[in-house]
Image (cartoon, rainbow, N blue to C red; front, side, top):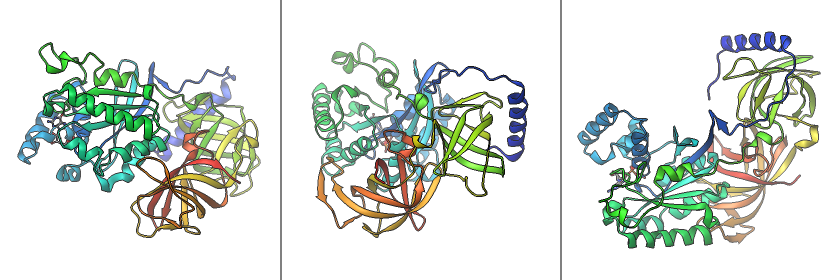
Length: 470
Ligand code: GDP
């Protein structure tokens, strides 16, 4: 995360002080954080079985959109063919670390932004390799919609979808993170001569799975035939002589991405400022850095720090992108100076600022969590101790009750009250933190409802808070 250095921080604060003291309070703007430069912002995760062609598809799309220049792609082509992997040139646009190239698989979440007619799209390219499921989860937990890439090659679709492939698991994970829109790119259709029969057969199987098992609504699933390698049907309709032209009149990949609905942002939600740093506390004033995850805030607003419920008044705001401001909205980060009565050590990183009274975010200790367990050696059992991470907060916790184990491929409960949750399992669990914390259900505020569980320095599971229990 970008952290301003002390010097720029001080400059920003000075700027804020001079502006806030001289500027009369203005009327509140209507917050519209989902609009950036007139375009709606949407985070999209790209998932699919390893080798489905995710990186090639997105790399080629970026190239066609002009985000990668001729020289770079030429260089990648040369390097790729020298390495004996000529077909990976487009994938390298996204897989840009040496290690990824050497292995030919994407290891971390690559973040790339591009624009469509009406959207600003942040692409989270999640790795499909089995070892890297944790990264895929990180991507999915930040996404508003997903592109599922399917390899249509004979035999390959069957491997990815039916025989223990990752396609089903990825789709289930997307649903468990609350993603409801899915764009299915049926890729590598060049390898089956752009066969309509093959396309239709794959669409039927995937659609059945997505709607009947994974719980997607059918009107939220879109299918697009493409070839990432040849660049067909990505940003432009295929020519009249192309085989696809004989049977497909639907959208290109770009048009389908543009048609994804941007999520209802939290701009009109209740104020939630997650504190990421506390610079200076005096008896009657505090300076801190934070990110607005929901709602908006203005100088003069009366607010509360949770979980301590300490009351304060916002004095100055300094946004990271705009040095002086009267108001900051959801999605923005910045520095805040507040006045109030502050006892030493009552406010720290991980606390959350709310408005409208301390009751609007009830601090709690016990949570019902939908959990996805990583590839761990020691299973999670009742009584297991760990650390719970959520937004900028970390707190020791205990697994109090394992309610159920869930089948990752179809979401059904496989066992109630399991004795343990071992590697790669999913489940519903009750977790208790040692102290009260400012966490709330994912459906209320996504940023405050997504948790990571770590033990001895390793991430052992991630999840979303379904309910606050006590
Ligand atoms: P990822 O693991 O899903 O990111 O897959 P990659 O993008 O690395 O592609 C895996 C392999 O499939 C590479 O050799 C690509 O060149 C190849 N590939 C990707 N898309 C297509 C396609 O549309 N047609 C064909 N024939 N090959 C493709």
